[in-house]
Amino acid sequence: MNIRQAKTSDAAAIAPLFNQYREFYRQASDLQGAEAFLKARLENHESVILIAEENGEFIGFTQLYPTFSSVSMKRIYILNDLFVVPHARTKGAGGRLLSAAKDYAGQNGAKCLTLQTEHHNRKARSLYEQNGYEEDTGFVHYCLNVPAK
Image (cartoon, rainbow, N blue to C red; front, side, top):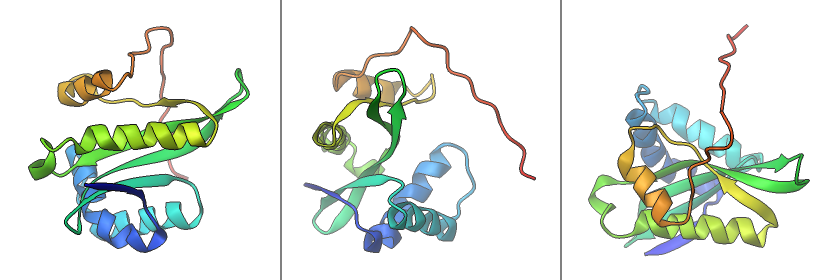
């Protein structure tokens, strides 16, 4: 298994995985939209995508969004997406992607990686905790949905 940073030319091959990831979170399938979204993020250097590849097949990915902490005055990365295809979930790809994300963040001067997942996603939560992530009990997170105009 090889983990590497995605290039813009990989967007079409990552799109089916990204589409499955979105479907897991109850979004309608939109393969064309998925490819366009990923391509735009990569072309505009708005995210970093790390992909797990085995025997020429993309079996997983994680997407990192760079941002900053005003308090620490340092870069942080939001580990926004992590997905491994079902037939490869026992091969350690998720852990390898998390490790690669940690290495990437460290090499780029980040203070930390942050992420969120649904409360009931026990498998993901277990994987994150096995890889050193700790549940943040010190802050309450809010979300405001903004209607399109």
